[in-house]
Each structure stands twice: as structure tokens, then as C-alpha cells.
Image (tube, rainbow, N blue to C red; front, side, top):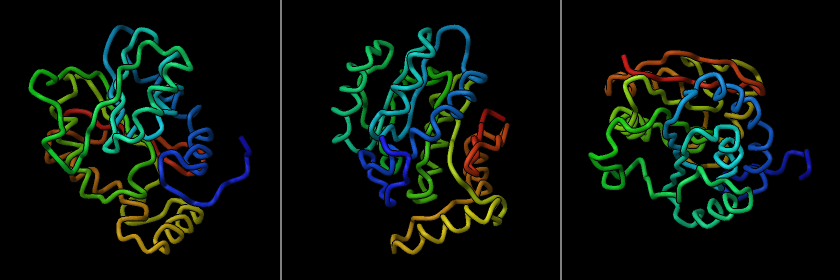
Length: 217
């Protein structure tokens, strides 16, 4: 794959998303190696998209079982094909999970069954309103010591951490899609607080991104 940045396109199977995923996967893997349990456990990815991240991470954690999910069922074949190609037998089939539709969330049997949930590069093109659904899901699904990791570029208390992030925000905003743009960490913290969660760590990542780690209060 070319290292040249493709035109902005948030579709999960686009060249742009693949380019961004290849660039950020190693730093995120480094955080997961520090945070994920050393014994057995289950890990959920929200908004798995093409499945590139979960299929890259899974071989590094053979003791864990990974669960992809997305609101777009059209990406499921791609996720499953990647799992087969990579021989990742610790990845379950993807499930439909739409954070705007509670009826797609998991049932009571899933309560407290996940050691971790992660979500990568979603909020710059998703409405901040999905944060409530994400935090409610996390409250229900995470074990007592579990954590939710959200990766991406964000504003912090109304400020951009770098000029490049401000430029990225302006590029997104100029597309004419109301929900596109960098969201604020403060809004995620507020959504988390409604569901018994709090920001435990705000980790600075390459390319002016953050890994936000939420856990139970």
C-alpha cells in the first residue's frame, strides 16, 4: 500500500481508512499490550469497520477472545474474510451493534462479560450523541475491572492540541456533514459520568491522537 495520504473518505473499506489504520495500529497495539489482561478474557471492538484492527491485534493475544461489531452489516464479510486469511481463530463472527439503537445492544447474559472494549477513529465522523450509547453499553458489558479505550483525535476543553488537529477539524467541517469534526474529551467524560464511568488515563499518541481509557468510578 502507498504511504501517500489518500483523499478523505470515512467509508470503512476506503483507501483513506486503510491508510490511517496502517499508520496507527502499532501505537494502539502498544497500549493494548500494557492494558489487556494477561489471562483469559473477552474483548469487544465497537465500529470494527473493515476488521483491519481487530485482525491485526488478535494474533498478539492468543489467550483472549475478540468480538467484532458494527452497525453496517455489509462489512461483515470483509471482517470474516480477514480472519480466515490470517488464521485468527480467536475472533468471533461479527455482530450488529448500532449505538443509536438500544434494541441492537447485548442481552442480560452478556452483562459484565468483557475485560475490555475498544473503539478506533469513530468520533471525528460520528455524532457526539452516540457517546451516551457507548458508555451505557460499556457500563453493562464491562467486568468490574474492565476498561473502554477510545482512540482518535479530540479537542481538550474546547482547545485543539495542535495546529494540525485544528486544520483536520476544519477539513472535516468543510465537508458539509453536520456531525463531522473533532469532538471534545469533556463531552465524553460527561457521557461516561452518567453511566458510572470516568476517564482514568488520557494517553498522548503519535499523529496528535489520544487513547482515552475509561473505567468504573
